[in-house]
Every structure is written in structure tokens, then in C-alpha cells.
Length: 117
Image (cartoon, rainbow, N blue to C red):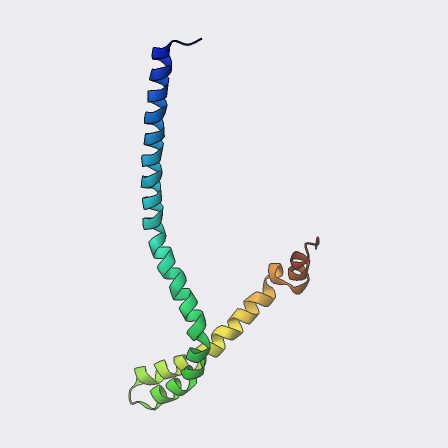
């Protein structure tokens, strides 16, 4: 059997180690919260954009028409970009998704039902 002094020393060492672990966990938690703060803001921004996106697309055409009527080359060019931008971006997105084999319907269905493609 161990002597009482050795057991007491081991218990004190264990208590010190547990306290060190507790302090390090608190530091890691604070660092993780600080690191995740920008990601949280980004996530909220993306969620808000997804809510507003359909309305922005609807407003783009009238805004583009108004900008096209303003005098000056830059205003007309900006009007054309605002007016045709959503259409061109949507077409580009459709083309890239149709060319990406990982997004094909058969593979997506296979993944959904856990089947091998």
C-alpha cells in the first residue's frame, strides 16, 4: 500500500491538474467564442439576404430603368447592369449547375435515398 503522504501528494497534484484543465477550457471557450463572432455575423447576413433576395430581384428592373433614364454614361451603364444583372447571374448559375456532374438529378436522388449511383 501507498503511504499517506504519497496519496496526499497525488491528490494535491490531481486537484492542481484539474484546476489547470478547467482554466484552459475557459480560455479555449473564450477564444472560440471570439473566433466565431464574425462567422455568426456572416451567417446572419446570409440569412437576411436570402429573405430579401426575391424582393431585390423584383426591384432591380424598375431601378435599372430609372438609372437608364438618368443623364450620363455611368448612370446608364449602371442601369443596364442593375436591370440585366439578375437575369445574367441566374442564367450563369443554371449553366454551371447543369455542367456540374455532382449536382445531377440521379446522383442527388441516390444520395437522398442512400443508394449507390
